[in-house]
Length: 95
Image 1 (cartoon, rainbow, N blue to C red):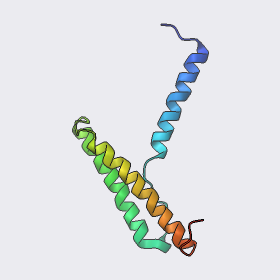
Image 2: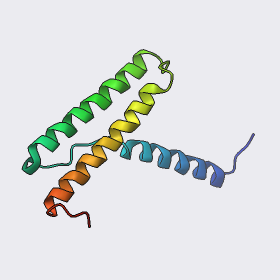
Image 3: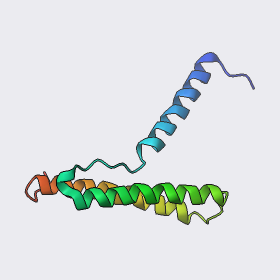
């Protein structure tokens, strides 16, 4: 099968976009010291996310999809903590 240069570029751009989305969805520590407990919780989430990834690699991804689901929930928890900090910064309002 021969792909045209345009098709090759489109496939490459698509692959890069998927990789970028996957990278962007990793939990991050983005809460400042003003909310020390929330920041510490984020740090633990980032650590847990990395450890679950290590477990996936060590077990050749034979964890029944549960580790992947756990990582998705860690991403969600990380995002919720950011929203909690934002709400605290806004006097409890979510606007």
